[in-house]
Length: 585
Image 1 (cartoon, rainbow, N blue to C red):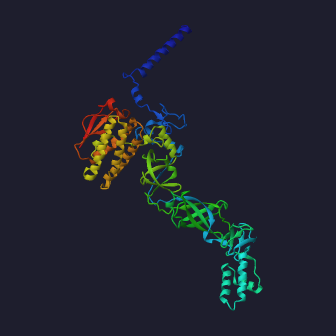
Image 2: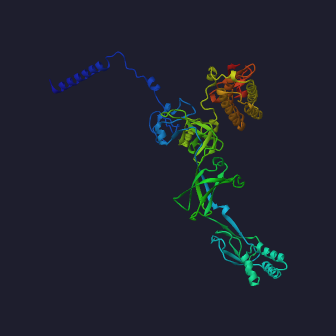
Image 3: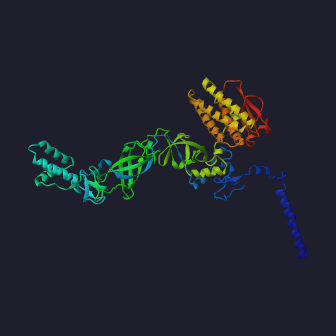
């Protein structure tokens, strides 16, 4: 057998053996392996960025904007609250987002004040002349000079005083026969503050003095010089302002929003720019009861000692005061960094999820007093809720990019976050307060419903101006429907719906078109349907109608007094589009 024939046989045997082994291992089973593409497709996950929700990818990776790891879309909050923005733990750390649980207690905080040092008005003195005449000499020539009591300040030439002295000398000569005249002449000089020693010297010399010295009545520092050499002065005219600077006043500016936070006796710690590294303390001993009409500022006064003369009038100071807790609000305070303020609205972000899976929802709050680095919250938060205190703007930016309620989207923000579907609400047996609603309340609620039905008809007929006027009446009727006779959960339920209805009435009044009014009418209708279902009203009943094509195919409800469908969201275009969901008795 040749070598060539042998090689051919070896190759043939190898191929046959390979085919046989392949059939044994892979073809021996009668059940063919099927690749389940359906399962694979069902398990496909869309990936997104927790900081930039508009990013969508079919596989994990990095965000092209911020470089963060993409996360499954499910964990980004798509299946949760549609108005909430969820973030992963990694995203929160990267954005330095911090939260804090709010609590109730005294509304205390630090308040920063600015002010300046001023002369103590009780130690300020106006040095006047008691002698009329011309200033011949000024012995104190500049502001800031220190003087002592009895020190000579100026010399005055006084013709009137010369005449008075001559009258004294003449009366002295006839004093034995006319003692009364002599006493009257001496009294005249005394009225000009001429002392007995000076009068005695005049009598001893027998000559009238034409120049008299003005002496200081008090000790202190000259804060103002009011005359010049050669000036003619009348009796009682001021020459100098003299002040004792051993005690000073620190006058802090109080703006209108902070006046109610400070009380007499509060301790103030302050620093002076010209004395770095040193802190001074004092207590407020006076608060100005009057507000300056020009600057809108009142004054809080602190008395301090300045025997070493380091504190000087006019120096600027910066103070910190611990508010005394006099604010009588809800007692809930939040850091200033937690609040986003748009001018009309103040909002915070509340964590409605868990610590491991936070879910942030925008919440509108009503602010009270400002406490420097904190605000008092009057409405909108309850003790125990968790809010964002650092990185609030980052959370708001994420919500805005995702098209969810945010600071810059007031129309979206008003859209009743996480509203329970009306149909599901009506199926429930809870929130039934018919037996608790007094007759007066039901009568007022019936008036609200009556105006609402007129508003609905105006939207059906596309009467824009009439709908605005009716919405104003609707707003007034809602305000007049009080919960004074309601109690417990019933009262809380109505107050919540009342606030919501008033907010959307205001939005509707600002709407510029019939389309915007209809869009706002969606939320008014849902809230009113739930209110009527909870409390009931006198009458033959109301129909709850539903159109699946309204609200951009999301569906919308409305109330009607008749079984005939008249769609307020489309008007003549689709007048009969809708169905009756339920009748409220």
